[in-house]
Length: 353
Image (cartoon, rainbow, N blue to C red):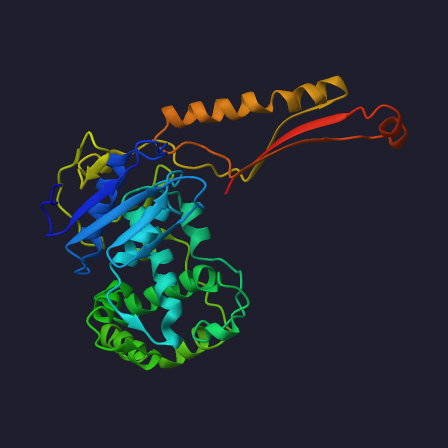
């Protein structure tokens, strides 16, 4: 196990021998090592990550200085790796009216860290911070949430807008990350009134009315979708760290991967020129369709299409993998259905996130 040169934190990635890890293990470790330096939240000195395999559900879960992430998780703007890593940096305990901040901040900073490392497009950045789901829920009242996804959806939108408020009120001298750092120093349960005080300390003025409207109330803010407002600039359809207001930047570390299947933290020297395709801006593609025998043939050949996309995973750093592949057919005439059962129309649909 190695220790990154920019901090006292070591990161260990445990990979089962049977795992089919989609993302490159060295890039996972280098990305997380850099993320630790970017956040600079004085988290645990050692972080252990386990790769989960099917039939374990997708996603991940953190507990203290450990987390697991599913083997199919990508390293991009909606990354489970970044999300769960942020959880390991949360050193506070919350009262009920601040429970929302835990998942909201993990979602928000997963996007920020991906932007810092040039791993998402402007469109993805904007969509991640402008979700309109569960917008009428009050973040500070978990008992009244219409879904457990409320802090994941409305939470990042509120935090993005709050980040802008703090930057503006402090003349660019403070950010939400500074508030996060103060939260980690809090003793006892973190209450909503404590959060108000920490925000005021960083912003240089009270934002109680703003917080009342968007955290305790049902209103929804409209954070800017322009990455430059958060310290990033769009270049060649990618998000690049702005030269004027970057997050703290870690120094390159080292990475090794042992024969036992355990990789350790992490070389980030290759992150500055990442140019591989990480995602698509196409939501749904109807790949092919046919009538009669042709339609049936298409359904039979759907497995070959799956094979093509699997091959892409071997050649692209962040492959274009559809979230869902729908294969099927339907008949156009009831009489034909009853007499022969012939499928008249076959289709394959690729749905992307």
